[in-house]
Image 1 (cartoon, rainbow, N blue to C red):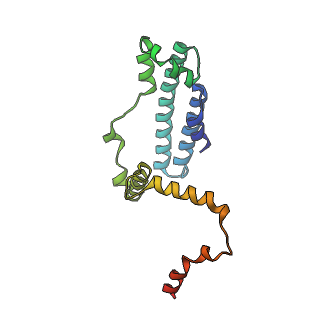
Image 2: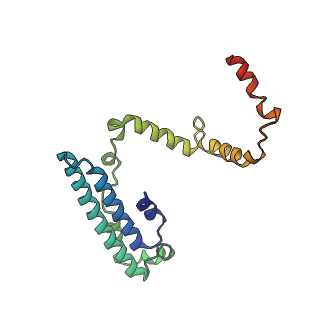
Image 3: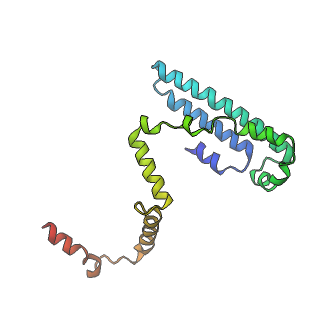
Length: 172
């Protein structure tokens, strides 16, 4: 998990690449956990070859971007983005960084393989999008308000427990 946080939070492209490779190693170890099974070893080796090959391509693109911008800082590269469009090696750098499939039909299949995980991910996505039946944003705001007002909670006050009395009476 630390490697994934490093990928997300790094501002240096070389640091991002190192964290990316740590993620690749973590995936290899996770997939190959059952090392006595042939499928597990094959899957781990396959994932390692794919992610390391993709990482090497990404590193090549990062090096080209740093040569064009004169820095490895992602923020500085983004600030110089309009200047890169006129550079001939910019297209090559983009191809190297973004090499791989972006076809959603080839990336899909979660619903047929793991229907429960797909359903939970779909409900979570709808919730974070704030769609009315799921109300992700509303629930978050209500939770934040409750946590901020917990200091005002008076345990020995009648008004604190009053809403529970009808529920207790109904259950009893």
